[in-house]
Length: 151
Image 1 (cartoon, rainbow, N blue to C red):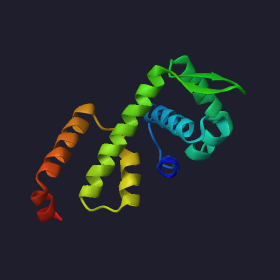
Image 2: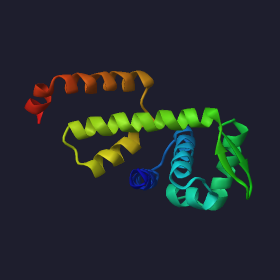
Image 3: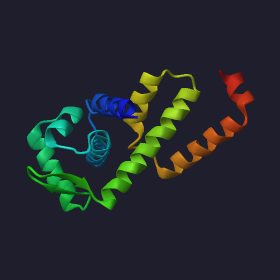
Image 4: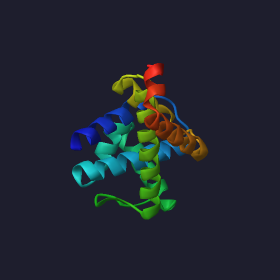
């Protein structure tokens, strides 16, 4: 499980090299913090900076903003804890990522590319799209012949 967490952090790091909107950037921070806490038991500015390819002062600025918006509790030099609101967003992004990754792998896309693509688009999809994609994945699992014919 820890290996998967590290892999997810690396995929977030790669995807973050591209230009993203402000809200998706906030989601990335929440996602990385959540992954770090689950992997290491804590998150700190240096680790967040490393995985998001941004400077430590940029991380501090965003952490303050996320704290002001109720997504986390942050005290300089003391640590970072996601609030219920922050965990909800991080969990939703994790679920989107999992659904997209599963779908791309069903299409025959190798894991590395599927993971990068999922990370790249997970922030931009409407919840309705994700629900329908989940239903489609379930349909394909219940009808393996269709998937076999496709592949």
